[in-house]
Length: 401
Image (cartoon, rainbow, N blue to C red; front, side, top):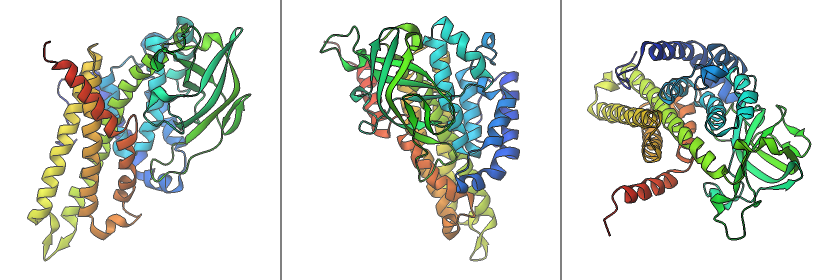
């Protein structure tokens, strides 16, 4: 166990879970990650291993067959998994956001139907807010759900759907004007629909098409897709929580969990970059000594380690705040912003320490260098985080009168 990024106050159960996950990462993920990533191959065996460990049910309550663990435990597991390969943490994250939204906002029938199978990894979750023309501007959603008897008819195009092909349950945010008069604020006329589908690509159910994987610079292995709805009919009992107009709040609640997850991913990738950098610096020799003995490299290592430690502390704080039942959007935004920015900087410093070899696909740092930028834009860009942080600070420190 490394000196950095330790978490005080963990229970014996939490420590045992983390030890098991770290062991799995070291033995089953790190040795194969770069090869799978270069082939853009889905990590089927790794996912089966995670199912056997029970990680798909980590935060799902015990009454539904899960482990009933906290957001902190989940975030620390994600940190370990991202240290091995960030794409694997993405496979779990979208699943958990949907499970969390069901647990917090679903009807009893929805919880009973989905959560036990999600805990086993039999039903795999994905969620969909973004569209081709809106990015982080969720209020500009144009996909629509229109009531038609006992069903809703969904039309529209969604974008950047992680696990779009492998998932079998997608939480889709659409505009639904039913019961919301003209001029209603956009966030009050959105609904989350629970869309069941077959895994795979093409027309996966009548009216629903997953065209194929988007070819990406990094974050490979995991399938990122579009989702096209054309007359997709969904029964009314698949409106999350049973009431329209609550979708924006439900999704934002889920995204708070997701932002802690992205912060944890940034922490994990940064830790791995630091490990690679400090190891290589002791092996590579110039001017008659290991480059780790040069002050310029020691300064880099000092800065990298400090950033790893600071990001981890902020991520843990954000997770603990959510677990305590307090509002954590400020802390989650800060943690996500800092961890993703620091991750990029630590990875770049490790890349520089490797010199020319950092540019070679034979070295793991090359993969990390392509993965880190995704964290700057996933779950809301750095700029969106700063807007959220700024607004919340003005709420907290408002001058009387």
